[in-house]
Amino acid sequence: MKVIDHIRAAKGKTLFSFEILPPLKGTRIDGLYESIERLMPFDPKFIDVTSHREEFIYKRHESGLLEKVHTRKRPGTVGICAAIQNKFKVDTVPHVICGGFTREETEYALIDLHYLGIDNVLVLRGDALKSDGVFKAEKGGHQYAVELLGQVMDLNAGKYLYDEVENSNPSSFCPGVAGYPEKHFEAPSLRSDIKHLKAKVDAGAEYIVTQMFYDNAAYFAFVDKCQLAGIDVPIIPGIKPIATKRQLTSIPSHFYINLPDDLVDAMEDAKDADSVRQVGIEWAIAQSKELMKQGVPSLHYYTMGSSKSIEAIAKAVF
Image 1 (cartoon, rainbow, N blue to C red):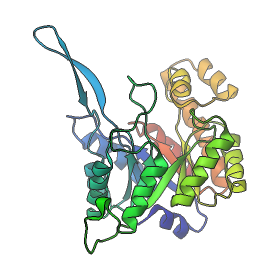
Image 2 (image 1 turned 120 degrees about the horizontal axis):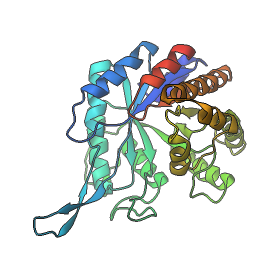
Image 3 (image 1 turned 180 degrees about the vertical axis):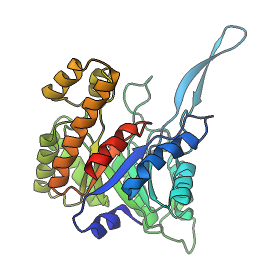
Image 4 (image 1 turned 90 degrees about the horizontal axis):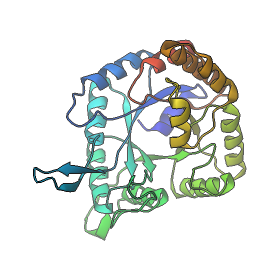
């Protein structure tokens, strides 16, 4: 079932959904299953599975020379989506990214998803390589998410690359895109960012999932500005509870977002790790309840590899 159909079927009731990371290469999938099982009592309607581009590492040879090689530390997004749907009977949303993929590789992945009966995709540009600093498209790949979205919509119309397919079977993906209540860090202004978001909606995006935020006022203002710009698709808020004091600096530096003073003060005053985690849980509960009261389409939680905090939040909210 498509994400947009889940939202429509809910008739104004706020849904529960979450995002998971694929396991590290070489590890078992059992731990991921255990994390998901913790959250199944809250009736998730869809589960996002992230996609990660290649990374470059240096391999030392016996001669002492270093060889630069590329690797993917978290492969398997398509397979994990299929495994989750088969085991838990919950719809999955694989992330499809520009970074590290050619148009041909993207088409092959979309065909696999179509054959597996996976109807949803979240279309993203993805991050730049750490060594590059700025995003560079793969040769033969997409530079922008709106271009990647165009390829998804082409496939929905039965249009494949190079027009080599006769009697083509169109896909029926429900594409979502990302929104940034505090703007994307590369955007010169929030208005400019929303302008580009509107272009994605015009190109076929059926819903928006926001980056995490910690001040609900930022989300509500973002929704208002999107509506004024003519964006009329559901905007799903993304929530990530802070779990450690280190995240007070790592989250703002990585995601370019602000943390409210009250949250920072409470975190800094916490005496131990358990107290810090509890502050993060309570803040996310308060956020979630206020958002639910305003009738948001779904509360979408970023697990970041651990579902224990999300379980505690869901128990208090759903």
